[in-house]
Length: 624
Image (cartoon, rainbow, N blue to C red; front, side, top):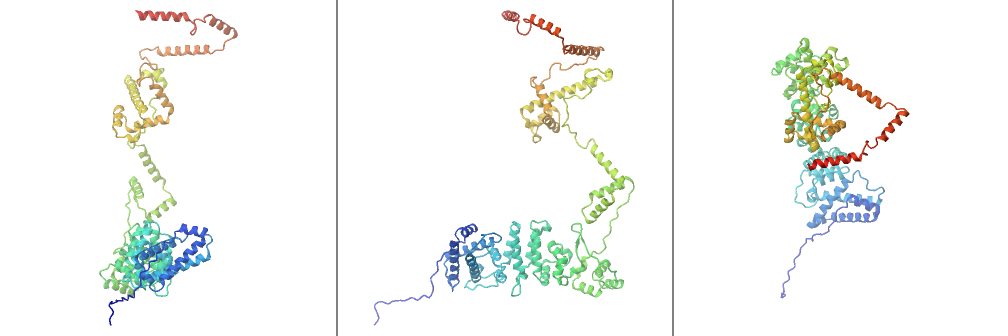
């Protein structure tokens, strides 16, 4: 008999999602304070982290985490990798507890095990976090890190995400570090461990990491030796070359289109490494793979011009050369002879090389380079041409040798004297530079004093017109100086160089007929000569900036006795001064004192009656 009520029992074998949030890893300063002040608390915190990751590694617990817990876990891993990678080279504490060190080591191992179990995509480790992961674990676990990067190490959890090769991301991150100036020695060591550290299995990661794109990145950073990160680029390409085989290098050169020295010059950093003897010693089979390197070392001379090597130790076998010319008529005799010299007159080897790669012979020019012959001329033209060639020549090894020769042997006296003569002509040409009037003392008349006061007997020989011109020029200069002084007192900034071209400066030039240099030089002259500035201030302060009245003796040319009069007046004044300052005797002093006492009322301001009469006279005039 069935029951009234039908019961349906649903059996679900799934497990509930795990919600177990985790806090971020403490920063460096907080960890240092915990170790110094309360290491027990820090120890318990690390033990809690270790227990947490032990639980996640059991069974499928990590797959049962809910979205919130998974986000917290990803954030913790990023902060942990950043802090531990940044801790390299820093002193966390002078004395760290042994138990703390042991727990940190366990935590580091559990975290790496979790990353290998879940994979990089599931935990969203990329960019900076990926490089921090390499810095923390590549030294002790190079194989696992390489497997995580190239995707060969598959995750053990059930994930639908495809593991991709992240070598390109690592290359781009290294480029960003170098361009931003954050690439350090520890980063270079990590690259070396990543590419060339010993592994238990064949290292295919370095072969796959060395790509044409990686070469182009390093060439851009190198920038012909002028780039900001040229040193780092050189170190990185050396590590990359020593980590790959010659077959891989041959494949990359074919991808880049490198078949001879001309195409190799398009990649100067790679070319510098391939022709280096040290690289050939480390990679002895390199020349057998890259055949054009057998032609010898490449030397760069005078910028982009390439000089191809020749073997001068042996002579060319004419019979072998003629045989090659019959076999390869498309090449010149010079090219075939140089190829024979490069291969030590081994005609069989040369023939095989040309058949395998005809471009190797194109490395040599079709004709030998002709030496430039300088034209010979006589006289001054020859020496002048020689001087021009010395001045116009470029910076090359030949020119440097010529400089050393000139320095050692000396310059001929004749050439040195001619050069000096031309230099002096340029210095003293009238139209070379504008005359500097900065230190002109225009107000001070530096002519002979006898010319101003007319005491010379031959003064009558001067032309009257010239004298009038000099007087007119002095008067004009006085007006100009008064005008400039007034402007200087109003605004000294009008005389600055920055005022050139302004409306005020144009007005000043029109009023004075002076150039900008002369106006500015007049102002600088006053700044450097305070005495002259005081004289001008005294000169123009109370005269309204206009010169009036007679200020000095003017010589009368019509009078012939003016000179004698002036001489007599000078003698009288001299005798009066001499008598005035002559020492007086006792009787003379008494007599002078009696005169002063007798005429006391007429001296100074003691004559009151005379002053009263003046007041009355003044009042009467006003009344009228």
